[in-house]
Length: 183
Image (cartoon, rainbow, N blue to C red; front, side, top):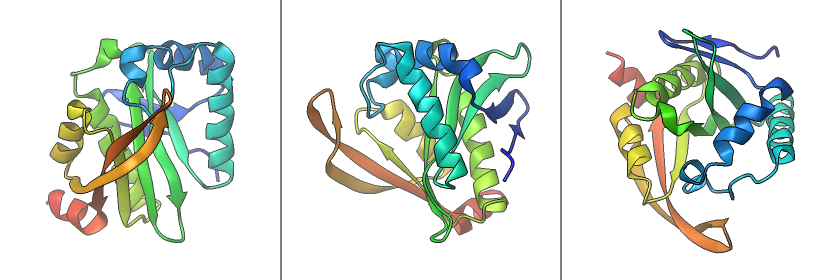
């Protein structure tokens, strides 16, 4: 399977390669980005390199797809979006994303997420897209709810980050709900 390149009005969603290692490191070394990310912030560029390798392996093994988010206007790499825990047989995955803080609150996350959702339901024929979000991450919860996700409840002690266990919400969007929302 060749890597699917996606486009929106303002964004191009591309395959992440090692030429993007500095951008990934720059974003995931920021405390405000990783605070609700589920992993500790990066302190070494090699961590970004390993993550890129993991994204590639997950794609090859059909267990995930992670896109780099680039602005069309200037080709600037501003974040990533994609599917984790991809289960083609069970037609489900979890969505994950992060943006550099300079690009928060511009509607870019929802633009990228909506395109990945469209691809997931139309091209991959998924039935369910889940999301695992820290209860404190109100911006992400509000974004997903606006897109049409339903909060299913709390997963207690679900993520271990910075030597502490954290509860998370689990949210989901089902294909019939998405189709209905498209009019």
